[in-house]
Every structure is written in C-alpha cells, then in structure tokens.
Image (tube, rainbow, N blue to C red; front, side):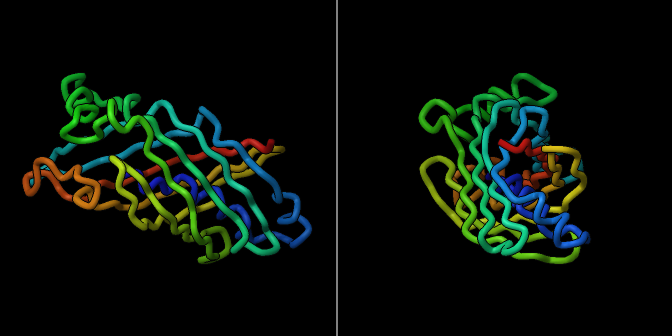
Length: 188
C-alpha cells in the first residue's frame, strides 16, 4: 500500500534540465529527511474517504546522474505511526484489519529500476512489501528543488490494496490507495 513512490522521486533528480556538470554534482547517497511528508488517501463512494500521513519513516536514495538506471531508492514506513483526522480511524488502520502494525511493523519499498521521463521527471519501479506480501509497484517522481546538499522530489503513485490483504470496506471504499509524497533528501 506504500507504493512508496517516495523513493522514486529521489531518483528523478538526475533528470534536471541542466548542464551535465551540474547534474554530476547531484551524484551521491541521500537520506530521506524527517521533514519529508508522506500522505495517502482512499476514496469513498459518494465523496469523502480516508486520508492519513505516516510520521515515522526512513530511507535512502543513490543518485547516478550520468547513468540514471544505476540510481536506487529504499523506503521503510512504520504503520504504527499512521495519523488521521479522527483517532478511531487511525486505530482501525493500525489494526489487523488493515496494516496489522503489531505483526507487520514495517512496510518497505526497494526500487528495481529507474528511468527518465522528461527533463525533471522519472519513473521508479520496485517491490513493495506490506503484511508479508511483496508486489511490484510504480511511482512517478518530479524534481522540485535542490539547494546545497538537499534535493526535493514530489512523488505520486496508486497502489491496489487487495494484493496486500488490506481491501477491507470495498466496494464502499476504493481498492486504490493514492500516495502523494514530498520527499527531501540530505546528502550523507
């Protein structure tokens, strides 16, 4: 469910529409900063739905501007940290009905490929593991900024809940979880 498009966006920094020597300066390993934001939403028939954020996550991305296919991303989310506007919904999401945060305390994403899709955009594909199930997922990342040792990406992606056994409430609630992430990477 964490198509963790997060990791995908980080790899996109190499797609900047800049001179090659400028892109080369982005080469390196970056840690996903705690100031990043990971938001998800699940639509509901008739409007509304569920929206939440993850407050505890970690990860890295390795950027190779001269050969973007060598770039990679890893992301780990702690489902126990999910927050919503209503505590009872947050408790439900952490329960065995959805994330099962007690038995599966970490959701991971490991990229398997990164490819350029424009001057400042990339597509990141990888393996998402949630509730003990791994499945291929795809995220789109857009480089939104860079300053000093920091690079920022906007990452989006849609993940089907059913392959991970998190499809409780369908068809009233969509089987699709939409992820919208603002990921900031700080060079190690």
